[in-house]
Image (spheres, rainbow, N blue to C red):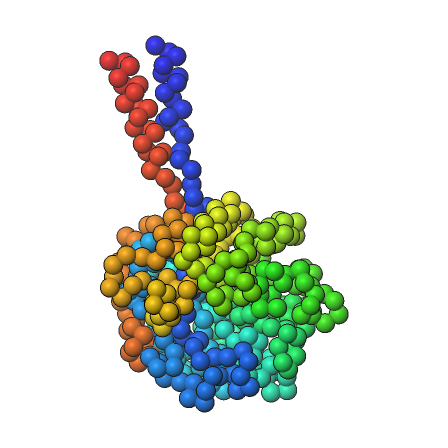
Length: 412
């Protein structure tokens, strides 16, 4: 009788594999930055975009979309924003209608349990003028973040994404060098943020558009330094700053088209080794794929890879959802996973990534519908520690029950 009992006992204590070991997983909800351009001399695609009109030139995320992904287990929302709309005058107050709307979004999402990443989506510019120029001095950038830090330092669920895809000297006119971004701009911004008393998490992006394939390259720097070398000088007294990497696997690896001709893992592997060697962490802040079987297989492999390496990749945010990307089945953006307007079905990318969302318990939270959808006019107010979740398979419970009933049966 003892031997059968011993054979059954492991069933009681053997858990099923845990897919979602990553702490923070979520969606980019893009549209609030629309009409911005990293090539137009004014920084906008047309004069009407400055500042533009909500629902015409730029779009806020739909409540239904935000709720959908949260109910699937997403615990991060990253919203790309326009510096110009947040702060219409350099060094001025953040009192625009746009800023008030963003504030209301932050309140809604953090109240419902999500992290909210403020992403200044400006490519290192303000109204087309390079940061560090006479017209846009570094102090103006620090002023923006001092104000945001003072506003949200009481809400630990707000994450500060300092600057999206700064182009460095790849942009014309030439922007700050890699040394300047890492050694001066980022470190000073972090110091100014910490001086306000803010303990929020911070994300900083490499130059060369933050793409992983450029991380070890010196082709967009001055003086032959790479982003990997520059990032070694990054300093945060609280140790709560991570590198934000973006990666796509279309032909140009820039996210502009939906085919998948590269693979994520060979690009990210050297970065993973670097992060461990230098005791740093990174988020994959933008990544996306198209609909093909090859793309979906690559996405599945990436999800497993990030989960397996979550000690140095604690967060990822899929690109992209939002109301104005169109239906990818009818000529819309290939990476879009915005829920279908019919409310029926889901995009194939979501079928993969939802298994790796980490906060399944957020589905049980009461949604606080305090923000109007994107077609309404902006309005609102704001406030909110990094949410952490883990999905434990039902196999653990099944194993326990089988073991218990097996023991009981043998004793009878």
